[in-house]
View 1: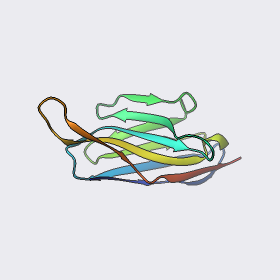
View 2: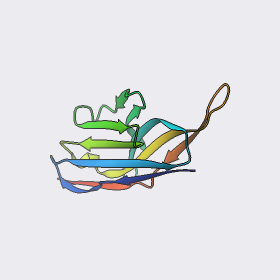
View 3: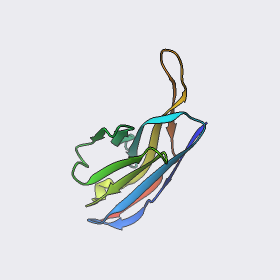
View 4: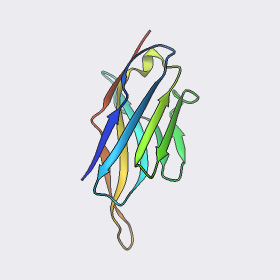
Length: 124
């Protein structure tokens, strides 16, 4: 069982910054990918940004140049630095991780894990 715990959400004015963090714990071999999704009221959950254990990153067009994701493989944590926040960034932000839970001969067994979410509210 893998648990993800997010922290760092809150209320900020437009143009401000917030930093989210997510820590993975439990029984797993390693984390291969971590990501942040968000879901605004009435909208589907969307991928904001992701990072692999080797440092490869992806960003949604809407956050490029404003958000930065980073990973600490030793601590199994991922952080999201959010700058120049806009009202449309308001959402519940969810941490995601793909964890290897068993090493197998051909394909390792993995588990997709989700945090409970943290609210980010940007006032205009």
